[in-house]
Image (cartoon, rainbow, N blue to C red; front, side, top):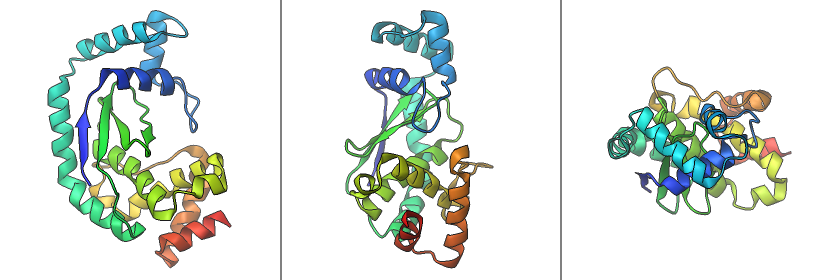
Length: 213
């Protein structure tokens, strides 16, 4: 499985308009979305957002081709070790290559069905972000693609987001310097339960069943 970095302006616009104002796990607007509405007003259009994206890239002196190259190189340093460890934990390999779209937005959604996730162009924690997003892919394929339907979207979301706490155990040395996977405030209790269980039984399916019950 390869992660291939790219930039697509239409994807960037979509990310800002659809995830900038809020998401399932946080209702706080991103800094970039706040700047967008401050400049162009509430309910920005695709057209005004396109202008804002261009302005943001220019004003922040972002070199897209160099960014793509840097992200690719930085990820490849950790990618092999990460995949080996994730495959041991989940007992599977990801079936497809994954595309990573760079975005000016600081909130980065993902889409397993279409094999992509977003990474912020302004991120200083690129490797940690990538591992976090890919952990969701491993969760989806390793624990059953029917789990969201069985548990409901909210419970599945809470569990898969909490499960990334295992990155702090299994991939601690691969995370960006001085960075841990913090998670959302509402998931801290579940994350602690995961860590306590994992100390006793490092079987991901047993852990999942324990959380589901």
